[in-house]
Length: 213
Ligand code: AP5
Ligand code: MG
Image (cartoon, rainbow, N blue to C red; front, side, top):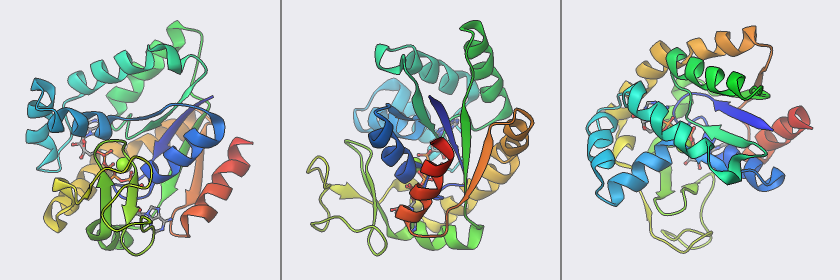
């Protein structure tokens, strides 16, 4: 099963993608997590990506597509994957479709996690992220068992550099301009399903499970 998670920054794509990945035994692939791991390790890719991410802009398509295609060509992706944060532009979606068509394959579901902008800003300041395994928490809504420590891998939790209110506003406007058109794109392909992302994460997950079967 090949699944795409769509939604505004902070809609809960990562939270749900991780739960879907566990439930169905699929790899969870987040381009944002791949970039953040590279920034943490000081790679050239990380240095380049950081200049865009810190401003809330998108990393150029060419670079992002190359990384994603490398990742989905790995062995663990044979039976499918959950893509979180990719595609984010129409050209990215077109490249992914072209690659899948070559393999006689296609995306099965594009899940749109719907959360209005006004809820997003409030969520982001409370988010804490694990840069090692990609797990995400919220100090009020989704707290870790021990403050500041990842439940899954024991690493330190941090506030992401791009979660400052000013950057979040930029990310939201980039989302509306460049990513929201994908909702139409996947609607036309008959794979788009929208879920209400404002309810507790377990209820969002139930709605997704009922779609995926
Ligand atoms: P990325 O890491 O993908 O960030 P994003 O899309 O801005 O999304 P987030 O990770 O911020 O939010 P999320 O939807 O995963 O929400 P989460 O589950 O954490 O990308 C970062 C940057 O990398 C981009 O700005 C860009 O520069 C670059 N980039 C990445 N991919 C790219 C691409 N394809 N092309 C070009 N550039 C790219 O949840 C948010 C918070 O809410 C958490 O605190 C969580 O605990 C809480 N929460 C989750 N669900 C609920 C709920 N139901 N109720 C209450 N709280 C909840
Ligand atoms: Mg995320």
